[in-house]
Length: 303
Image: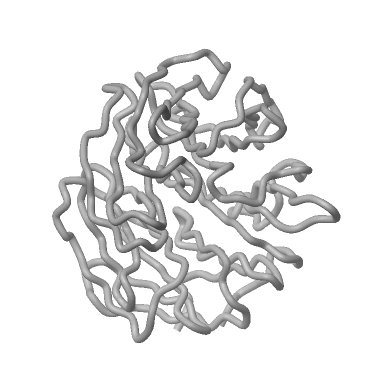
């Protein structure tokens, strides 16, 4: 069963760092506006004070780890991009109201990646995640759609200069290299929310649900694993834990966990509420954002 409820409330988003200590970030409904909050899973406690007036759309915020080991949250609010270190409280802002925001590494430094539409004149802007200096700016073709209904895939710092551009209404995911300032790959998409995840032995992996299967692909497009579930998959998560690639998914009233070496789930964790978002931390803790609270469970301890 679930081990604990870290916090009560209606949580709509959760993300975890892809490397380093097990840190996470959540969004939940507050009085009149959403609230952002960082968490340290080593102590199962909040990291820094809550952030008011936080966006509720997943495309408008990002959380990850910089190459120097510092956590960072980036989000848009009222024509400004905010970049915040929850471990120290340091924050800066730059002008702009991008449609999408993510994190990456540019020339060895942490970077905030922003995409501005419309499709026929879209651009990517890259800022230094430490001081807001402009590091790159280039145009991009978004097909026949604007940046709306898209989101940026990233797993900073494990994904390096690579980010993915995904969209619910298109059947491909574009992989951008922000240092080369170009799209380097186009991968098939099931049309469901996907994620970039670190790999234990190479470049990041693309993880996405397709009905009752969880597909794991290399960025060359090769299918690395097909993980099977008993029913259609909802929210997904993945991480490298103790050198093993683990994936997780919400299926009906349970969270399923796979060791990617096997196609069938190795763990099942019952959950009492529908899952809005899911994260898997570097120590193997599952975090489920639900309308009744932020739930935590260890896949190693689940039966």
